[in-house]
Structure formats: C-alpha cells, structure tokens
Amino acid sequence: MEAFLDTFFNIDIMLQALPLLLKGAVVTLKLCAVVIVLGLCGGLMLALGALSPRRWLRWSSIVYIDLFRAVPPLVLLVFVYSGLPFAGIRLSPFVAVVIAFFLNNSAYFAEVFRAGITSVPKGQSEAARATGLSPVQCMGYIVLPQAVRNVLPDLLSNTVEVVKLTSLASVVSLSELLYSANMARSVTYNSSPLVMAAILYLAVLWPLVRVISRYQRGLAVN
Amino acid sequence: MRFFETFFNLSVIEKYLPDLIAAMGVTLYLAVATILTGVLCGAALACLRAAGNRYVNFIIIMFADMMRALPPLVLILILFFGMPSLGINLSGEMVIYLVLSCVLMAFAEEIFWGGLTSVTAGQWEAGRATGLSKAQTLFYIAFPQAFRMGIPPLVNRVLATTKLTALGSVIGVKEILSVSSSAQSFSGSATPLTMAALAYMIIFIPAVIASHQIERRFRYTR
Image 1 (cartoon, rainbow over the protein chains, first blue to last red):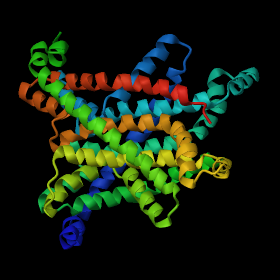
Image 2 (image 1 turned 30 degrees about the horizontal axis):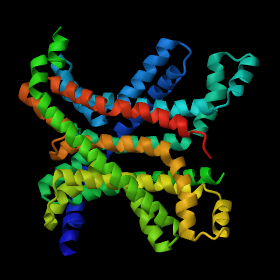
Image 3 (image 1 turned 120 degrees about the horizontal axis):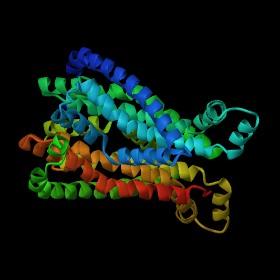
Image 4 (image 1 turned 180 degrees about the vertical axis):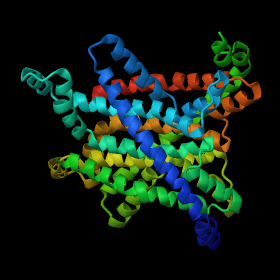
C-alpha cells in the first residue's frame, strides 16, 4: 500500500509538477478550441456534401469520410508531422496536430451531422420549400436546428472524444497536458505527475460523460 | 515524379513489406483479443448491473465513467511506467491489451445497459408471469433485445477502439505504426508511412463499409 501511494499519489511530487501541468493544460485547452471548432465546421460541410444531389460532390464526400474514419488519428499525425517534411513541407507541431485532427474529426462529425439531417422528416423541407424559402434558408432555418437537436448527445460524446484525442499530440512533442506530465515523470522517476494529469482530464471530462449517460437514459425512457 | 519517389519508393516498399505484414499480424491479434474481452466482459457487466445490487452497481458505474472520461494514452503511460515501481513488469502488448479491453468494456457496458433499460417493464413482467426466473427473463427476453439495439453503436465503438492499437507505437509494441516509423528513420524515406496508412486502410475500410451496412440493417428495430 505504501509503495502504491508513493508511486502513484506522491503529494510532494504532484505539487512540484502542478505549475508545469497547468501550463500544459492551457495548451490543451487552446488545441481543443481550435480542433473542435474546425472539426464542427468541416463536419457540417462534409455532411451537406454527402447528402448533396450532385453526384461528384456526394461521392467525394463519402470517400473522404470513409477514408479518414479508417486511418487511426495517430497514424495521420505521424504522417503529417514526419512524412510531409520529405515533400518539403515542414510544419510546427501545433499546426501538424491541427491538420491531422481536422482530417480525422471532420469525418467523424460529418457522420453525426449526416445522421441528424437524415433524421428530419422529408415533409419538413418540402413544407419549407413550398412556403418560398430558398434551399439554403430551408437548410439553415428548418432542417439543421432540428437535426442538431436530434443528435446533440452524439455531438457531445464526439466532442469528449476530441478532447481525449488531443493527448496524442504529446507524441509529436507538443507541450500539452500529457506531454508535460510525462516530462515531469521522466525527471522525477515517479508516476504521480501522470496521475495528476489523469485527475485534470477527469475534472473536465467526467461531468460531460455523466451528462451523456443521463441523455441516453432519457432517450430510452421516452 | 519526385512525389512518387518520396511516398511510393518501390525498393523501400520491397525491403520493408515482410516486416510490415508481420506488424499487421500483431495489430490484428491485439484487435481481436481486445474485441473479444471487451465485448464479452462489457455484456457481463451490464447483466450484473441489471441484478441491482447497489454497491456492485456503484463500482461498475465508477469504472465505466473513468474509462470513458480518461484518454487511453494516459492510462497506457501510467500502467507502462508506473507498474514496474510496484514490481509488476508488464510487456507493451499486455499494457495495450489491458487498457483497450477496459476502455471497450466500459463503452460496451454502457451501450448494453442503455439497451436493457429501454426494454419495457411489461416485457419483464410478462417474462416473470410465464414462470421464468429473474435471471431467465434477463437472458432469454431482455438481453437479446438489448444486444440487437446495441449493435450499431457497438460496431462504431469497436472500430474506434481497435484503431487505438496504434498507440502501441508509443511504448514499443511492434505493430504497424511503430514498425513503419522505425523503417522511415532507417530508410530516410516517407514511403513506410504511406505503407502504414495503406495497411490500416486494408484492415479498416472493409470494416467501415460493413459498419454502414450493419447500421442500415439494424436501424428501425424496436
């Protein structure tokens, strides 16, 4: 028990590492903000593309979505960060992470938006078009608000996945939360900083996970 | 032309193909072990939760919340670097298998539990009224329906979790990404990374396409 506490919950080391970890947490938050916003926008565009009546647009969107859902995000990240320099494109870790995660997230968000849009009955858009709204107005004012409401739990759980995903940025030595914690671990020869990082992730993500569970239960009862 | 030499260099492909095929074996083996353990134990946990013991359920819910809220890479690093201090040496493969199984178990438990709660009370009452025991009602009436309802989200979660085997590269498991990364630094060519991406596509694109079909098939079942 003593050894366990000393290895994983060494308070002294945790307090020592805390300032470094908080600095890392700020980078993680910045990364999350950029990646989530870009992923949502890209996902929405792709979903609209995948449901478009134009065949080339539809098929290229679907191919994009399936392709990037099939490649692990870490592989994309390593490819963008250490593969592209061979083609003369050198990127900072932050930009590499944003590009790699955008490719991955937009595909996942697209699937969620697509499910939402197809869940809105056809009569809704027909009625909207009949009242004289343009196709764009119909999508923006009638279909999308209902679509988003229908898939809100999925959007939320996808967002949680994105936040968890940002921990992979530590692999390309972007000094975010997990990277800082691992740094502190290798300096102190003690795993407590990693546990501290886990606690910080939990502090943000646990409430969201609870909300998702509540949502799913609510849907089941209705 | 230079593009092809950088990303599709034939002599590099020839040299590293056998290693990469062996690495695909490791990835597949880890994936299958994870899926079997995660889905079966997840189903067992959901059934255990249906038994309704308050203390047991508290532990299950805590476990499921933790595993869903924490980034898997954090868990992997804690196990891989922390356990040796307690005298428990786990191989990289073992760490990946343990962490991914627990993550999948938590998600599978939530999915099956969501299914079980949406089986209406009347079904339970009918089962009990025909003389089935509570356990028989669970196994013959409720769980088969919960399983069927859970298949589409479960398939997505299984794909997401098995793609995480790429995290093995961080702790030296000889799976696709780590073999191709080291091949990339040996050969000084980006080609092995292209091969890694293609290897994942060969494994996962059929799985993604199959998941669309499964989703379509099980969509309107209640």
